[in-house]
Image (cartoon, rainbow over all chains, first blue to last red; front, side, top):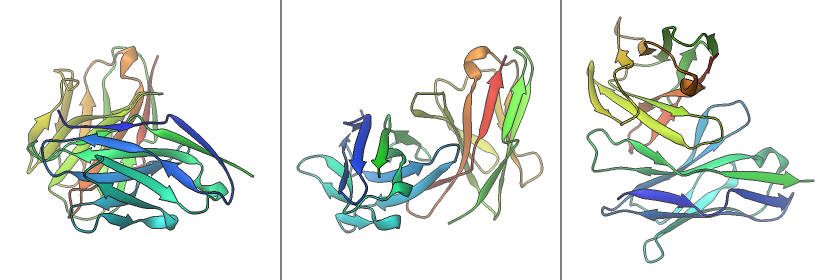
Length: 115
Length: 112
């Protein structure tokens, strides 16, 4: 079955330190993977996407993610956290096997950034 | 990034009442999706809609749910007889060019 697993429900970092949010996927197909961010009381914003081009994907706000097939991972990173990065982050899988491609969401990782 | 609006932003209703949630993409789209997020749980797919027909639906999307595009622009999700467990954020989404989807701000549905 196709799925994504976010390994941490909560991550806390200090402002200015690196961020690592972990995601593993399971897929029979070559996957499309995304990271979305949800700020409090806001909608879901696309952060970045992997669609089988470059394995290192750059997104908005300085975030990037690397697709590693050997590890079935798509971890999200940022070199230096900012207070405004505090939000919930979702690793999302696109199901190529479904008719119109439903998205499967991970459970989310709540990122807290301390001053 | 394509823009999607949703109305209302918050809907409070009594159990057993019907609610209609609306989604309006700014530009013309053929592919629409509804998802929901129960508080504290993951975002779940409800239904996909293409060219005025349901393309795929999840096990959550039972007979009390329906979708339609009544006037060629609005895209609606109707819940016929709401239950307490329908309380959630409901997100509309439209498709992008690389399998991504762009989400509206959501409607928070509270069933009392």
